[in-house]
Image 1 (cartoon, helix red, strand yellow):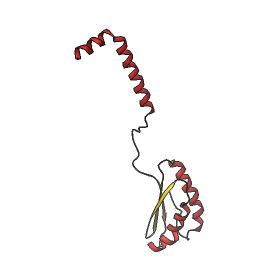
Image 2 (image 1 turned 30 degrees about the vertical axis):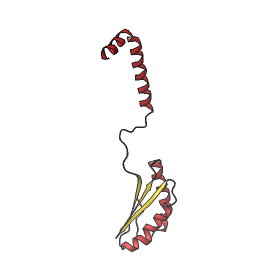
Image 3 (image 1 turned 135 degrees about the vertical axis):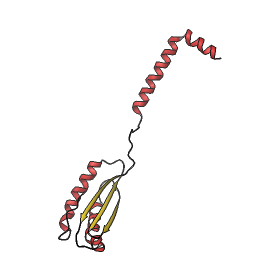
Image 4 (image 1 turned 90 degrees about the horizontal axis):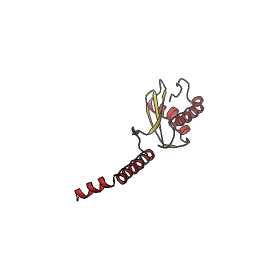
Length: 130
């Protein structure tokens, strides 16, 4: 059986070379259309907003700082969900976006919405930083 394949390959080498070239061209075409990423992203697209509020307890930070920021960010396009953490003197709000969104556009949206809420924060609270 193997001898017959070798004899056929020697006798019809033009056909074998043509088939190999055709297979190579198809493989290169298929490889160029493959949706593979060399370094895939494992972390979600997120923007973290930190706001310092010296002198406020964790409950005050939650009510006066974190909740207004969460409410402002809740209407963003492509937003999956919002997580927050309020500790004494610090508010941390994490906005997590869908995978198909653009990181830079997400950050721009958050910055624009934070400009709106900055004026309504209590006196002595630093500006929200993303």
